[in-house]
Image (cartoon, rainbow, N blue to C red):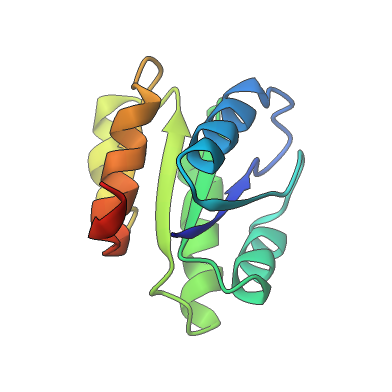
Length: 132
C-alpha cells in the first residue's frame, strides 16, 4: 500500500478531479491524505515529508503547472526528499509534459485517464506489485 498526498497547489479552486482521484486511490487500498485547496509548494512538500508519503499527486487546472510543479520538485530536492514520486493531473499541454518529465515528474495524467490506469501505474512505480 502506498501513502499518497493529493494536493491542489496555487490558487486553482477546482478540486473535483483531485477528490475523485483521492477516492479512487483510497478505494484501491492506498492511504491517501488530501491537503485541500490553495497549498503552496512548501506546504505540499512538508506534508508529504511529515506523512512519510510514497507519492504526491498534484492537480493543476489553472495553467500554472510550469511554475508550481518545478517549485514542488525543488523544495523536495532541497529537503532531501527527491525519492518521493510526483505525479500530475490536469489540463497539461503535450510540450509541457515532456518538460515536466525532464524535471523529474514521474507521470502526467490528462483528463479522461481511467482511475484504474492511475492505480496500476502507482502500484508499479511505487514497487508494490502485490496490489496489481
